[in-house]
Length: 113
Length: 110
Image 1 (tube, helix red, strand yellow):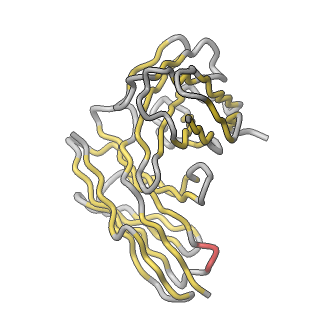
Image 2 (image 1 turned 180 degrees about the vertical axis):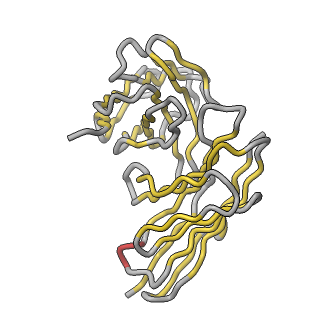
């Protein structure tokens, strides 16, 4: 089955700890994205990557970091510098090359206390 | 700066009661407008892409339309399983990522 997987589904961390969220896709898509969703709000773009070894900051990149060493993988690290890290995190991918429909993973709910 | 505004924020319908959701947008140039459905605690599911004013697309009980300033998602004779949050997003010609609205929460009661 082709798709996007995110793990884990739920993640709990203490304040001051960095945490890495996994995102893998087997759709052979070039572009990958990370969004954050807070209750009752739309999706806000954190980082995106159009090709391997290249990524750009989105609208709310402060306190986050990413890497894109493989086409299939785009992990997101939530650092201790992120002031309000508790949220629902969504990873997406799109074919690129003029096709911009994004397909989403199931999400990771991060709770930091 | 791109802006996407969805209305209403929430909508409650009786089963079979047709209605429309609105998405108004401001962009410097529209490359595409996208509709998604999101169930609670899950990732959004892609529904439609519209590229130019006058375009329409349909899928089962849903029909999306586009003008130069807004898009409508028409729901005909909805069923309880249509209950979800519907998200609208735009892609500006100057950007490579979508800008999302905050969504309309639809509840269809039997």
